[in-house]
Image (tube, rainbow, N blue to C red; front, side, top):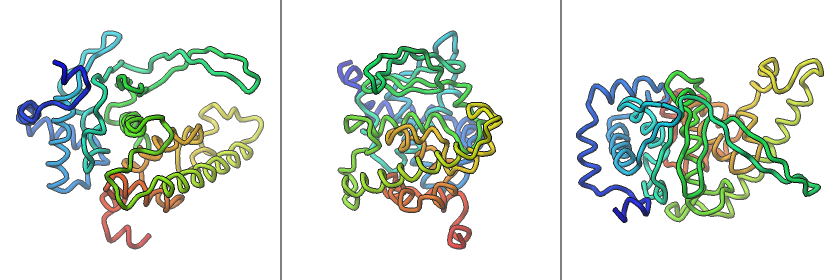
Length: 286
């Protein structure tokens, strides 16, 4: 009981029991519905199953607004959430206990203070949210298989959890287990890449004709030229989260635009989705 309340991972016996309950048919169905997993080899597939079993055994799933969660939904979310820690210690997902799933987007009250000190309160619609020390909240409509290949709200929110594990969400995850990485190095590449992306977004916004609403779908052709969703320009924490989802599901634009940043993500996650998805021959030709 106290182990659960502390947000620690499940006992090995419980993880093993959960692993046996993942049917081969259910696993294949869930795997094949997520195209970005196509390049996993047999070892990675088994490692992912083990991480998924750990996550299912360690976290509680709750439906909100009448959402009924079945095994297929929980398995799909767990697979996507487990991919970032495929080669990492699952302890990075400890310290919290719950995954809450809404049928669709949900509303979050926000409070911001502008440069003049004026407090602004508003309601924002969201597809996902990761609370510091609290749950991960997801919209199933935005998390289910079939969403655009370049976006993944589950990976996005769990990247925030990796960022938050070391404290403040600042785009710098805990690097203690990566002797080849240094916080100063990470911060330097993150800052320079983030600032470059900010300039790219500004250039795109300046290029949008005045008769086109930049907040509408009519502006998508302009924003589509960016290597990442423009939301990545919000702050370094969002840049890390958006970069992480792109890294796993649509790595080519990211790797081409920001090779140094892609290299750091590759070293941190200990994975190379570009080579996995395109194959070594095609990657070497880039």
